Image (tube, rainbow, N blue to C red):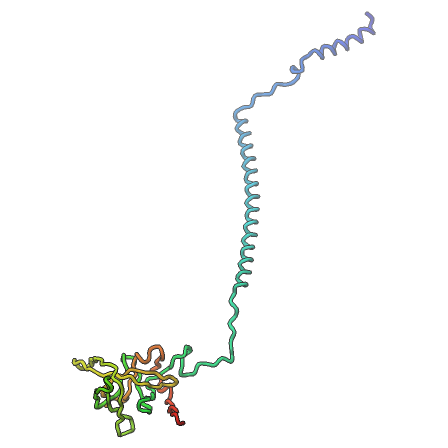
Length: 254
């Protein structure tokens, strides 16, 4: 065998030897993982997982907050529109409306003072009257009281003194009933007749019950009590003669 053949054969032989070697013999075998390495890997994986969950939760919470804020604003806008639509119109002030007179309240009740002047139709004259909210019924000064019968019905006749006039004024009118009055200064019970007379006070004309009693020792011959005042008048004790003197009513011939 000459040198030329040997030089060609040797490389081929080496190549064959190399090709017959197992591939697995050239790859290094993996080293087994230790317990500390496994634990470290799990901790790292858990940390990455928690971080990912936190980021997703934060994003969801932010989007939810934005939606809730927008919804609340929509509700406020809708409520504002509803309030404007149902708002009551501003009251219209009528400058031409008549004002309540100084002797009446806003609801039309008379304002009366400590004393007032009334008109008695039965006598066709005016009298000074004391306003007494402590008395239940009104009373009239009467003397020479006589009860009699007329057309089968009880009537009463009495004389009433008039301030500034010496003569007594006689009145005859139907008897309504009797009341029993106990005086604070006496133990006896007094039986008084009650009559109904029409009086005028200010613009008001009203039938009123009066008990008859001798008030000649009193300053005022007429006393107006609560039954007359209720629902028609309020009392201002700091004033007097608020309603003024009633005008004489016109007769049929006037």
